[in-house]
Image 1 (cartoon, helix red, strand yellow):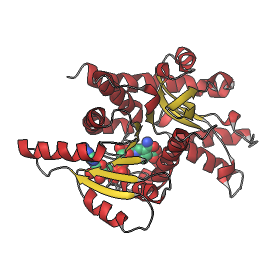
Image 2 (cartoon, protein in one colour):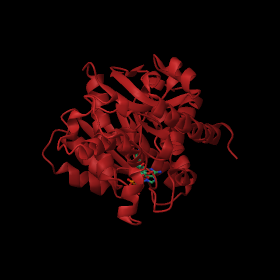
Image 3 (spheres, protein in one colour):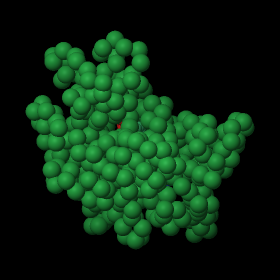
Length: 339
Ligand code: NAD
Ligand code: LMR
């Protein structure tokens, strides 16, 4: 029996992500939690004739004592017995905002939700989508550490959308219809210049004009802005993110069932993953997105492809690392030194 939980299930990402989970043969119980509308989303999905049994839980409307208890009970019911918890809860960007501008609201949301995960499903794989990922993952780690249940192999920042974009934009540039044949590692973090596509490591190798490289890198780094601008105040990427989030969740579940050879880039706490120490030493950061081999217990091995970066990519990595350190510190300090 595999139980998957979506926290923030009624949102722009949460709804299509929940639909993809409902379609998955890998999931037996799908449990949805949000502060609004989750029972409606659950009832709607429950009419689809696929195997996952769907349950919906919602927070109480207010914050009085009895209502706080009601919300806690809903989180407990949603999370108990979870094997995988996917978290797209939080506010999205509007034009003119950076992902870091979301910290003020989303840091507290992630802290609260991870506190509940630590209590009710401490052994679950935790997939953090809420932005800014570079800070929300360290927040999650610190909350789990304080609760004494942190397992670095089971905590992932979802950066798959950057990989999906890189694969798709390269296919576009080469005039190829099928982007799924490309495998492009994207490392670093998940915002602006912390996103570093390593096109030199593309499989199968690609050859595009050198004068196109800057534009291509910029498009991957700022692909999120393209969507925010096009949606014109109505939010950020939701459908492509639901696809990317599900792709990563499916990879984690398949590896948990014993499938071998699954590798996906993801933002992890390096010192807790085999092979991560060398990358932490090389980058000077504890958190970094790298290709990770997934196994029955989650992140089995961090693969050091950073050492193979060419000179152009090394410059990108230097810039990424500087920005990333500030983001990571902000997340760690939010828990360790609350103001
Ligand atoms: P949205 O506003 O459409 O949905 C967010 C949902 O979270 C809402 O239904 C809201 O009610 C719910 N929510 C808020 N506080 C909650 C709480 N305490 N507990 C449970 N649910 C709560 O936003 P969206 O477009 O779905 O984006 C969600 C987040 O995902 C944003 O922070 C966005 O920046 C981020 N995002 C990340 C990536 C990535 O690649 N990692 C990609 C796209 C978006
Ligand atoms: C993305 O990359 O699309 C997301 O992180 C959402 C955003 O704010 O751009």
